[in-house]
Each structure stands twice: as C-alpha cells, then as structure tokens.
Length: 160
Length: 223
Image 1 (tube, each protein chain N blue to C red):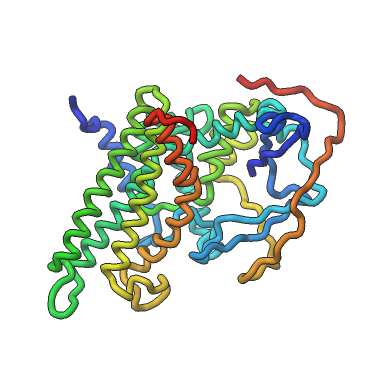
Image 2 (image 1 turned 180 degrees about the horizontal axis):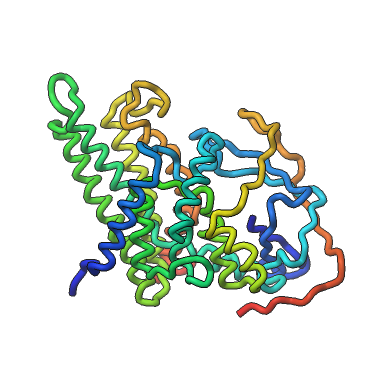
C-alpha cells in the first residue's frame, strides 16, 4: 500500500504554499478567524486575492464558484492555509456553514444571491454598533422574543 | 447570518424549527461585539427589534430547519487546521530553544526541555494522521463519524498541551502579552493557550465528542 500523495497532489500543495508566501503581508501574525477592526482591510484584501484564484471556496463545485477540488486537495489547501496562518474570518461562516448548506438546500435564486457574493468576496460585513465599550457588558433584559408571520403564505420549498 | 428560529411553537422540539439566511443589514437587526479574553472580536450579541425577514430568506422547507442545521454542522470535520497549527508552533518552539540561552547553556540542551519537545513532536504527528484519516474516509465516499470526533478531541487537547509546554519552557516570559517588547515568539503561545479554551467548546464540546466516541465508536449504551 502506498501512503504517499500523488505527484499532482504534491505539486498542488506547492503551488498553494508559494502563492501564500507572495500574497500574505510579510511577517503576517494576525489571528485566523478574528474580525478585528484594525486588520479589516488586510482581511478584505486577502479575501479578494483568494477570489481571483477561486480559492475562497475551492472545494465547491465549479458552477457555484469553486474549483471542485478533491477531498485530498481540499485537505492540502486547508493545511497550507493553516500553516501560513492565513486569515479567513472574512469568509469563514459563508464558506464553511451558510454557503455550503445553501448549496444543498437553497433555491436557484438563493444560490445566485449568496454564493456568488461569497466566492468573489464581494460582500460588506454588517456594521457593529459604534457605541459599544470594552468592559463588563450591559446584561440584556430580553430573555425571549416572539415572531409573527405576516403576509400571505408562500410556496413551500421542497427539500431532498 | 444563519438564523435558526422556532416557527411552530406547538411542534415537538426538533420539529417546528426553520432555517433562514438573513441579511445582517436588515433594519431592526443590531449587533454588539463580544470581545473575548484574547481581546479579539469574533462574536456578537445580535438583537432583533421589529425586524422583518422576507419569505425568500427561508432556506429549504419550513419547520425542517433542525435537520438542515445538522447538515451544516457536518461540514466541519477533519480538524486539520488544529493539527497543522500545532506543528508550526512546535517548529517555532524548537527554534526558540536552540537560540535561547539560560544560565550558560542552550534551552535545547536541557533534558527536561528535550523530552517535552519529543513528546510534543509525537503528538503533533499523531494529530495530523488522525485528521488525514477523516479526509481519507471522505475521499472514499464514506461518512466520517466518531473518527471525526477523535480527531477533534485529540487535536484540541493536543494544541492546549502544546501551548502550555511552550509557556512553561519560556518561563515567565511565556505569560507576556503579545504586545510586550519582551515577549518571545510574538506571544503566539500565550494567545493559543487562551484561544484553546474556546476550541474545546466550539464545534462540539469535548464532552460531546467523548459521548460520540463512547456510543458510536465503542458501542457503549447511551449514558
């Protein structure tokens, strides 16, 4: 049994490694998942660079803006990204959770609306309240909430 | 954002929940940052005040959200990031012990330090192989189950031990904040030590992983 990766897989790994060297800020030491304001422009710029390679979600099928990478290539990609400490806070929820679920369950319109914005890094993060301050948090007194349906019932989407 | 909300209050607990993809800029939605103990902004409190969520935000079938949410969670699997992060930390730590002298000799010459690093080397490699095992199952079209729990559990604990080893080897310098001018290795170990506490919760707590391993991996009865 041969436990080695194939030459093609190894060369893919190398290409990711070299690309990261060229495209991350020199001496990069930020946190991978944070959304800290001080580094926001770096996160966004890096996400845009990933997008030009279709590397925001490279394991997604081509029709959804990915490259359809194999599981092993995805593993290698993630390994290199993690080793380089590459920031993905800008897109991690969209790629890892919301978008992937949208591929499985979303309607065509929903997929068009969200997946393209994720893979092209073309979305602007929602603003956080400017009035927050560091320190003990005001405890919210709301412990439950209610919702109410308004408008006519619409068509129900079937799931698989 | 992903919003998972109860839409049928009378249905049993796993039924009657729906899955929405909601624009965070919707009027009535506001957020307040939660700054963690690393001084990081990764989470928010989210408030909904008379926010209107249009029907086209509903993902999939109404009241089937719970089952879709379990699909969402299935996307986090191999824990390879943790295994690789630990390997990088180890490499940095090895370099540090070679280049740092204490009481006239290099840290790397101390038996206590060397055995610690050797243990860490074995663990980092083991973590990587456990992650590879999960990916291999996926590559073969199989669904990793307790194997993913093993990788997650081991890598989380292993990273914490790695951070702790680093801090102990660095002595009191290891506890310095990353902005301090005296901090070794840019404070990565101290930060990792704090960050790791959260990782033992996120993606399924350590206790949940152990339950899965016990039930599905070892065939033990539900506790």
